[in-house]
Structures are given as structure tokens and as C-alpha cells.
Image (tube, rainbow, N blue to C red; front, side):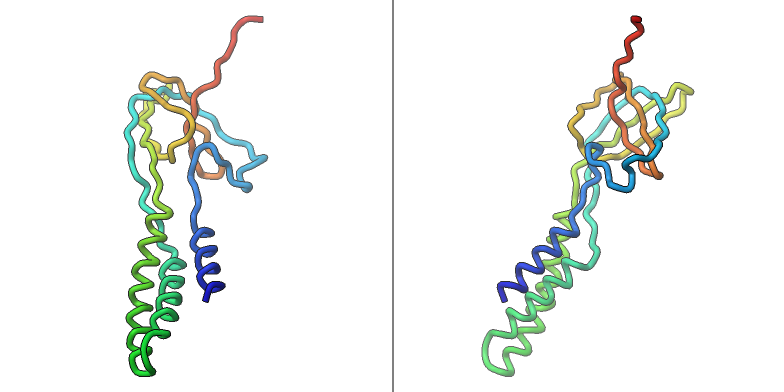
Length: 155
């Protein structure tokens, strides 16, 4: 029973991921990226809703079913096992959804051409403010915003 609970916990944690602009996936490393200069117009906090891959529900259902089936006699154990499986699946889904939910920021930027874009990304280490010069980095279809590096003109 303890091994089953440990395995379910490992599966649930494996489903967690991050979209932080400070974390680059291995597939994006050593790839050429497109960089566009822009200026921050505004930022606002948002929440990226958690995912439901089904791992949480299945894990919770298995654990709930096993735990419920060990209650009572033969007849009761079947009924309580079914109830435990359903309740475990509901709880497992909720745990997975909340575990993969992420605080993020919506960044409204203006490009040098005058066009405006809105980008949502997980909160990173940078605190972007209106008026900040930024770069928009696009790699493999993924976009992130970070402060523009300081460029010195002295030689």
C-alpha cells in the first residue's frame, strides 16, 4: 500500500511543469532565436489554469479504490471500494489541477513599428515596469519577454 501511494505521488509530481521565462527546455537550448525590441506598456498579474492530464484522477481513483475496499466485510468492501475510487479520482483531479496552476503576468508591449502585442508568461526573476525596454525572444514557437541588455556606445 505504501509503495502504491509513493508511486502515485511520483506520477503526480512528474505531471508538474513550469513555464518560467527563467527556465529553458532542453529542446530550446542551442537553437537560434528571433529577438525583437519593444517597450513595456503595462503588466498585470494573471493565473495560468492548471492542466488535467488524467494522471491525478487515475492515481487518486486507484488509491481510493484500494483504501475503500479494505473497509468492512465482503459486501461492504465492494461498495466502499467503488465510492473510494470515485472520491479518489475527484480529489486526484483537483490536486493535479491545483498543482499545475501557475501565477503569471500578462505583458503588453509596443514594438518599434508601433504594433502592440500581449504576452503571458510565468512570473520570473525580473520585475518589468511600464517604460522598460525589453526584448521578445521567440524560440521554436515559444515566446518570452525579458529586460533589454544595456548597450554601451563607448569604444
